[in-house]
Structures are given as C-alpha cells and as structure tokens.
Length: 529
Image (cartoon, rainbow, N blue to C red; front, side):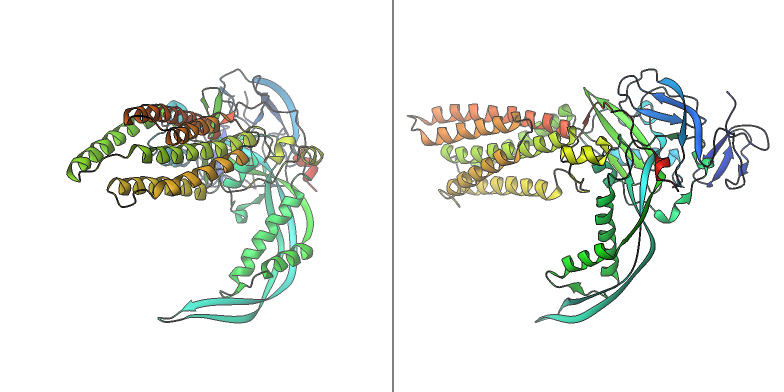
C-alpha cells in the first residue's frame, strides 16, 4: 500500500519523530519540517480520509494513519481481527504532538511496574510491552479569557522562638489571561477519572493542527458532544486562576470565607469564548485479567502515567505466610521470656475489630467498583449532556477512589490494635482494650452499612459474620478455655475467607469490565471554527 506520507528524498515512509519534532524517513533517515510538507490528498487540514478499524468484540473504533494494521484491540485487549471500513473524519483545530518516543514510554512503564512486589507475572514481558501503542485521543479545549482585579483581606503566619505572629494585609492581585484553554477528553473510551490522573498537559506545546503530526500514530475518533463538560470546564478554570491568585499574593492567604468570594468573582468575570477540538498524545495498553481488563496509559507529552495494578494472590499469600510465621515465632519466644499468656477473651475484642475493619474496607471498595463499572463518574461515556443529566452522573475527581487518607487510617487502626494487644499481653492495658475495641468495631460496621450502597456486599457480609461470631463468643459463658479457642478458630477462619474476598474485591476495583461501547456520538469538527 502506498504511503500517505512519502519521503521527498527517496519516496519512503515518513514518521513523526517525538525526539526531533520533525518527520523522519524510515528508509533514508532524512528529516523534513512539518510546516513545509504536503502529505497525500487524503490527509488534509480539515478532513482525514482513511481506514477505520472496528473491534467486533467491544465496538471500539480506531483510525489508522498510514499504519500497517491492528493485531489486537487497544480497548478490550482481544486479538480478534479488526473489521476495516472506509471513512472521512473531520480534523480538530489543535494538536499536542508527542514529546516522548515509544522507547521512553516503555522505559517509563518498566520503571513503574518493576518494583511492585505483588504485581501479576508477565507485566514486564516483551510481548506485553509491545502492545503499548501511540495514539492521539480526542479532547475539547474550552477557551476562557479574563481581565480582572482580585482584592481580599489576607493573612500570613510566621513563628519565632516564643510566639506565632500573624500579619494581615489588603491583597490586590491582577488576573489577566487572554486565552485559557481547559482540556476535557472527547472520548467515550477514556474514563473521566483516568483522564484526570493524566493531567496536567503542557499547554504551551499545543500547536495548530497539522496532519504531519499524525504520521505513524493511531487516532481515536471523537464520540462526545462538546456541551457535556462546559460547566466542569468553568470550575476547572476557576481552580487554576485561584492558584494563580495565590502565587501573586506574596504568601497572604485569604481569611475564612473569603476564598468562596474569590471563586464566585472569578466565575462571574470569566468570559467563555468557545470550545475547540484537539488531539492529545497517549501511549495506551490493555492487559486482560480474567474476565476484566487492566489499562496502562502514559501521557505522551510529559510521561504522567496511570496504571491499573491488580494483586497476584499467590505472591501476596506467600509473603504474608512468611511474615505471619515470623510474628508467631517472636510472640512465642516473648511469651517464654516475659512469662505472659494469651487472654482468650481479649482476643475476641481484637477479632471483632479486625472483622469490622474488613467489612468497612470491603464496603468502600465495593461502592467505588460499582460506581466505576457503571460509569457514574464518567460523563463522557454517555456522550451528551441530556443523558448525563438523566443518569445523574457526577464530576470525576482526580484523587483515587480509595484515597490515601482512607488507606492510612486503616493502617493506623491495624497498627494501634496490634500494639495495644501486645501491650495487653504484658499486662499494661489489661481489661481496658475491650471497652475501646468493641465500640470502635460497632461504629465501623455502621459506617460500612452506610458506605456500601449498591456495591457488591459479599466482603462486608463476611466481615460482619466474623464480627458477630467474635461478639457472641465473648458474651457466652463457656465451661473451658478450649471451647473459646475453638470458637475463635471458627471466627478467624471466617476472617481469612474475608481477606481472600477483599483481595478479590480489590482486584475488581483495580481493573475494569471488558468495554462495550455505545454508538458513536459527537465530532471534533463540530468544535472547529
């Protein structure tokens, strides 16, 4: 097949070089300036007439720009034969060219996955990494302008050896931006929460669209109407300008309540000009994981990355077994050295606390997985503002679903519990801990019941069962400690089953269902002057 980008020197195939920011011939290696080059008639500044490949499994579409074909679907990971069809698509107004070549993207991926202890086997295999493809993803750039003065009462605090000193001042910051371009993805395939994690883009490197930048890459067609993110783009523009106001305030932060006034003034004074289509660079890879898929996406402009990372249970259990054996040996030795014994009824309170913690974490994971699987935070999936409003889809947040604060809190509770129990064994907190552990466990169970909402309830139920067994064992009067130990063994078996279930739930949370895309919607050419 004749190339759409023939080399002016030898007639070979030109490819856009991220390193050189020029077209580079695969045959003779010569470089050609993009602005001075005219490609095949099928590739123009306003339209792109080429082949589109559609996956028969998930319905995803990808446009091939002078490529050799597709051996697998980049969305669902299936190696099905992509169905080819002829199409003419509109071109966007802007493009952010690739700044990272494929070799650097591969190195970035290896560095991110190489140190993960519980990562599934095969992530670093050559065959898997070869699936990393360079692809331009459609975006809308919502254009705003503002020329404003922000005045507020600010304060700054400093400390001396003996005092904290607070200074107050009237702050006046000039805010003038002729063109603030706010990006939102125009792709049904790219989840909004993932897109948020791939920002920020180096907007200073955005160029007026030239088809030469597409040479050698894949292109996803736009599927989302531009009015879907209009209100979100205003919020994003206000957040950016607030940070600029903060930079120009010489360290004086707004007093309580003033920040909202600043945000309101900026929102009222911002002028919305229009939304223009753009192509943004991504390196995209899909790995199948049981009946789900894991995405690995690298921002092709600055290397910001997003990677779905499920847990290999065999590796985790092997590691946990070694750690548990070590802890058991240490406790056994301490029991002989310090001459303490295990208080069987105190173990009931510890079992109740751990079980409640499992129920809570399981509920949080299940609710977040349900939201992700049903696209409740992904406006782009539904393609138009009317459907988004009907489905009550919320704006995606950049922070992870199971936040760092939540995970830190969980680890702190576990650490306190382990420390407290070990102290009780030595008699330091004898009789006090149950009065702490039981109320805390009840609170966590109540929060879990509230948090789970429509999520899968298996982990939460197992945690509640183990919690209930621990409570019952503590309340009943058994004739001998051996009966308590037997009952506690049952409770801890349920806890182990719960831990296995929570890992399964986490792996669901860390992956995505195999996609099934709706019919194609909006077009980038509708967002072009």
